[in-house]
Amino acid sequence: MKSLVTRFVKDESGATAIEYGLIAGLVSVVIITALTSVGTDLKSVFETIQTKLAAVPKT
Image (cartoon, rainbow, N blue to C red; front, top):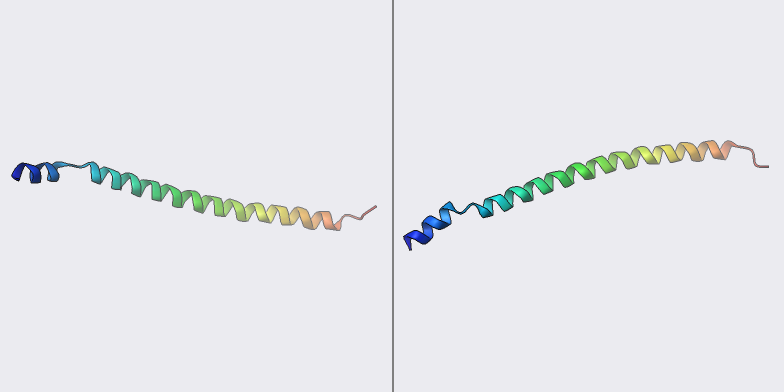
C-alpha cells in the first residue's frame, strides 16, 4: 500500500495534462480576441467600400 501511495505522489502525468489544457485554453482566447478585432476592422473596410460604391452614379 505504501508503494502505491508513493507511486501516486510521484506521478506527474496528470499535472502535465492540466498544463497542456491551460496552454490550449490561453491560445484559444488569444486567437478569438485577434479574430474579433480583425473582423471588426474588416467590417469597417467593407462598409466604406459600400458607401463609396453607393455614391457612384449609375449609368
